[in-house]
Image (cartoon, rainbow, N blue to C red; front, side, top):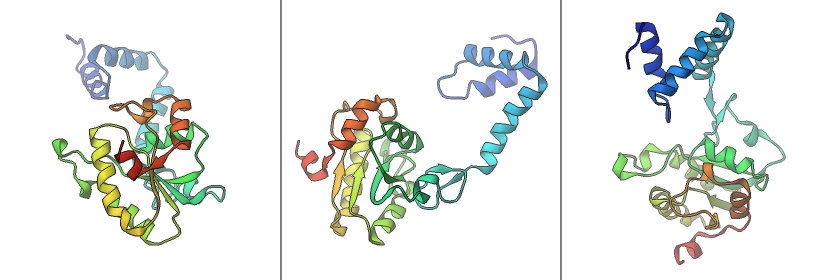
Length: 205
């Protein structure tokens, strides 16, 4: 792609680094911003800068938050005895949108994937073990995407947590193997949360 401006080319190259954005889409976005007022473009840029500078991870669950303790963990309306373990913030949002879950979360920050060089030490697993070891937890829901990496992580978490004698459940397989939680429709995901099954039972199927 030939550019009439080095500034334009640099901007397009940066936008095209975003997931799912090719050069043509990046060019369209950059040209759209160029047609906006300077104040709007400044607001756009400053919002991203502020996001990166000020965003936090909840000290308890590691969900993305504006505060050191997220709104879910600090809410008196949530069931603190039930912890739903998810891969990342997108899964928290997906489950919250179902309106079927009222416990708290634990965000791992990824899945175990030896092919990608991601091991247990790269995830926020020790924090989960510490939460369970502290007591007061009556159920752990493993709500990870039903794919190879998700199943590997499920098995590892089960081995780490079974010694605490806390019921460990996993979401029902209403979600096809190989799917991603964040792309599952809310009704299916909601039913999978409600009809969750003991992890040991799920392993035998």
